[in-house]
Image (cartoon, rainbow, N blue to C red):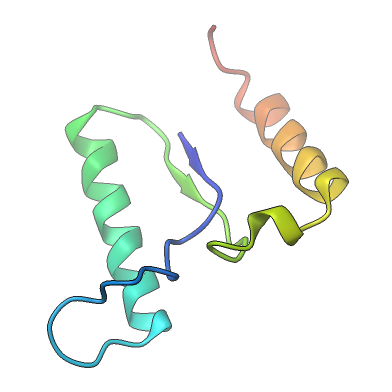
Amino acid sequence: MICLTPGQAATHLGHGEVGTTKLSATRRLEFEAACKLLKVSRGTVLDYPDSKLNLQGFSCRGCRLTQMVRELRPHV
């Protein structure tokens, strides 16, 4: 499973003051826990900016994802 962003652009940051770095770390832990629960053998979180994915170059995203699919060789 591949998650393109670490999820740091949430509008609700929870209780207290939480910065984007802390929120990103929390989201990564949540993603890891979800992968375990779903029995996903390999989960990867990329560092594209959350809520700004459309501003990233399409060819950059496409090349990175193509490379990962070729490395992982998923069964479809």
